[in-house]
Length: 178
Length: 419
Ligand SMILES: [Zn+2]
Image (cartoon, rainbow over all chains, first blue to last red; front, top):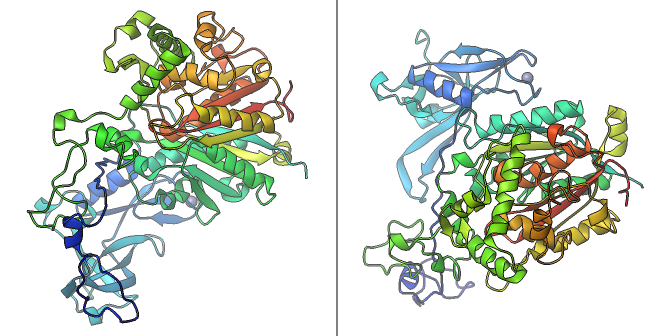
């Protein structure tokens, strides 16, 4: 084991620190395995249509007449009344910021210079609090607010593949932009 | 407190080798919707608790539990997942009802195995990483798990073979067990082949079984050896399928005006995972049936049972399980089959649904698929495969390779099993 002290290691917590070098040199007893697990999830009618419409630059939802609900992303059944949903309905590509976070770390906990703005957008035309998660752009972190009106910025048509990232991000909706 | 638990509703999808037209959510919804309709209830009001039986690696989600509520009617309701076979899920529902805390509980189990591209690898992943994976010929990979940033000169892991050709599908474990069974029970490969023949023929009379075939045991014998002595036609094919049961306290069934099928007893048991030291005689089934018959106060199962469904994911398993369940002496199940006793008009009709051979291997839904057949028989709705006046039945399941876990459920038309 490496015996050098780690910087910042408190005196009250002595001990031997395991370094990746120790693992490589097999000073640690271990066995190794990497599972091979691959899946191709069938999307079904609701999500397939949603992605197809995104590719065409449109956002589509489903209505539940029983609950007077417009659901986006669309579903073939309604989890409130447990009945099948009824009609397809096109929605606007604008919405309202429900909540957001300004993320400064990547998954490896490295600092990101330009923080990532991510949040939940409820889509105009859908029921309140119905929408999805996405990025925000063309704004400063300090401008982002709950309740802010935003609009989708789409990738150019030839770059769209039928994915939620066919929308690049949502930008502030300024009067007349619609 | 004299609570009794019964089945008040069942629903299931079609069983198919693939279901590209629906998502797993829509698939589960289909089965549950039918079960609630069958029971005549609204899950949003009338079901107190929901249980799904699922294993993350089959599903392809970490913490699959969280992806369950919407499609089974459980949004913002008590809901949990049992990582096991459907009969184990049903056992949990029974216990919830017996506490008095819940009166009506839904249990769902499914296979959407067609979404899983690497079935053999996932089964291999269920084996012990130190003692069993290395002798299963896995491929040595280029890097440490999750750490592609290790330097190029790192020592390669000392696990497994480096030759891709030496890789073995984990079903070889069934080959090991079959070899052992043939020797210890003094049974022949032909006799095992007859199980596949019977069950694939039974499937003709079950509208939801898709793996029906009119074979001779020579056909099975001449199919190629995959894991000698196991041949291609000794192995049940994988299928997608979802099943939901509604369990309720007896008084709920009366209120609903439903003629209930009682869950009189159940049991489940797990062998040690040490493949080299555990018994090869389905000890889990023996333990599970002891627990179930004791609970159901069933003294002479052989006499009382009108219809039986046992796990037959590999042909020899049906014979091995019948013996482990005490329904035949050691090595005697094959004889029962030869004498016609395991057919519809025999003394021990077994796997009239077609079993895993005829319906398909639907992973954790297997126990519910077997129970579904028993319930259909006891309800008198089994059509051309109906056993006359069936009153009591037993369903048994096993969690498949490489598991040593099995479960048993005993159902009857009566609150107390008639003996
Ligand atoms: Zn609704």
